[in-house]
Image 1 (cartoon, helix red, strand yellow):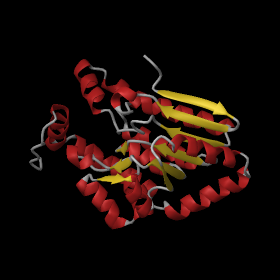
Image 2 (cartoon, rainbow, N blue to C red):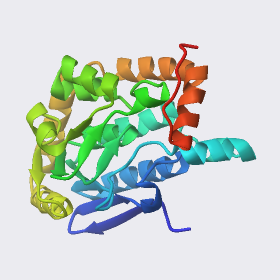
Image 3 (cartoon, helix red, strand yellow):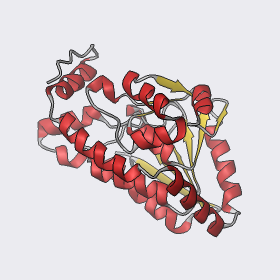
Length: 260
């Protein structure tokens, strides 16, 4: 099978690509770990990092289909997405001392939304959107999304995304403060690389201190969010509503939630 994550290093810029196109770049636990390894490796040598998917999708979130299939075959630990592990990788992405840019096309949904918003700069294709789709399967946002979205867009907009699972298309995301800029379809990666190339020639110590200061001021509740999301999501994953939500998702029908 092709690697789930690709990494390219050129002129001080590391481009990390989620490479699961057949699933709209849905992430298994293994793919997420590969992504974390690529981010850590890039931070050791690159002066800027671009995180992207393909023209169809940035990432559609956790791969529910693979997780369910793995449980049926006794291989769940190999592919299922561990939330604490995912949170640590989101934290790594936020804390790397070099500028990070998300080049977003198609959906950035679920944990994919968290990955995009954890970057310092978000370039969105005009045909892309952000989405917290957890409510559709009986879960709550995770990956730090409860803090990341609220820090950029405010409490009521975070509530709207989380409770309605609405698609926030690129122009609205820009208006809400969730995107840094919007470009024509197909230009997001070129624009991200252009910016990364400029920043790779900048003052690395100044960039590092600037990132740290802004993140510490704006994401003061992130660790609390990680802890709360982990505890509450663990509870929700054990409910009948979650089982029903996943079944309905796979069977492409409307779920029948009962509050159990």
